[in-house]
Length: 147
Image (cartoon, rainbow, N blue to C red; front, side, top):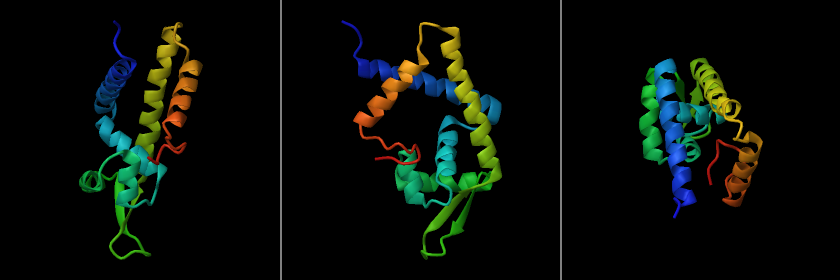
């Protein structure tokens, strides 16, 4: 009997995440987890911690722990929300936007190269299937949001 589809999909995603993590560490000095969090922050500039946590698929506590090192490293600023006393607005810096743009383009190019190097892969068909699966699962169309 062949491996269940859900297991295979999980193994493929883990392999892609591991590859992305190695590439990002080597070329940009950040982990894939950091890149992902910054990508969500860039998609939701000025969001509060709760919104960033939801968009990144993590707890508010986990997001709260991620922010101070990213502020220290110059990727984010944390500003008081003028409309909410204790809430902070998390704003990506130009450094964060540059990282998300350049590293994101690099990762996308690496992934697209798979389809060029392996003609038996069909990027359009895969994209269609993933879009359909995301819709069936009720995932929002905005990648910065989570259900």
